[in-house]
Length: 106
Image (cartoon, rainbow, N blue to C red; front, side):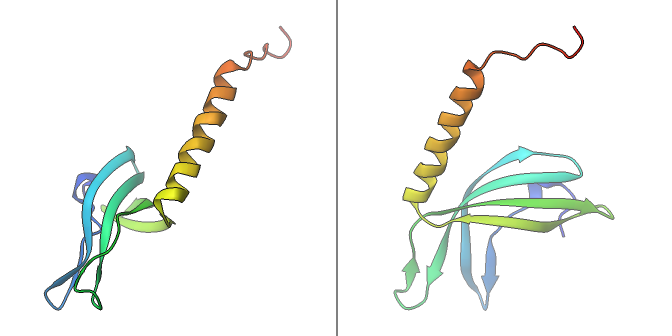
């Protein structure tokens, strides 16, 4: 298990074959809980090649000096990724345009 968040990878090899190939990653948060977004491909044995580019967001918890995966969300397609991006952009835009609420009792 990695002890440094930068060492976390989703590369997965079995019998000399890289079944999950990490292409890129972005560390979204660090600390005792880390969140990392990965871009990756999976080996398709039937076609003897890597499949389409996929995305996943994973949460890791550091315990006893090691990071262990706690949860994950796999984005199933580029179309789903675009919908997530669009929704987040819309929500962020709405939040940024909302007036800041006055403090209670002020």
